[in-house]
Image (cartoon, rainbow over all chains, first blue to last red; front, side, top):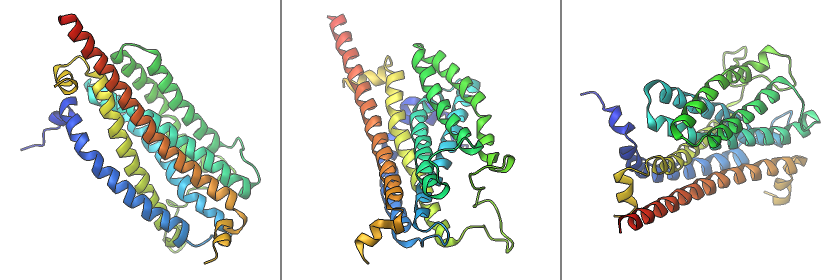
Length: 247
Length: 57
């Protein structure tokens, strides 16, 4: 029997499911984040060139990955909402936006704090930094656009179209360090060195990946909390929400 | 381990600890704003229920 996705796409069913999932995601976030911080701050060795400043990377890189990942979730959910008219997907896009904006902000600020001691400047208009800043403006633009439209259906459609056009910025961010000769260093994880291993030592790679998982779990937790609020708001005239509020 | 030496982070202490502090603030802000949004919606729903009851009387 095929799994019935439509059942879980019903806002009512998903509301209950999300409520059951949140404690698990929250618990997993605390555990993985705790272990990741221990790894990042105590276990990982200082870099032979950058010294202890390399510890900024364990925040900066996961935040930057999440800034792009959340945008793809937002745009993907927006597209599903547009194509299949799925209400839950529309709400997911709205719920994801402020979280993605906050990760983008974190990536920009920690990048600046890393750039100052390593490059000697807080900011430079290089392609990677500029395209990441544009990503932040895309999140803000998406939220402002949705806030400006009263009808939720039209707000969802306008937001989804806006987000889909903005997807063009994601490959620009990703490839910016290859396309342009910039101050920002190229990707270390995907580049392979001469011996055929990733160009990053396991002692640095492991804390980085643990922190990335922690950020991902945190995103899932907050997304579910926000999505539940969004469901209640959009479904406020339905009988099941009325019963929930006033049993 | 010497704590003051550890906190100095080889001279990068200011940059490293500010990064981790901003990260902590961003995570806490996410949780607080999600909770605030939930409360806001709950309040709106209660107001709606109150108006419905008043309308039915």
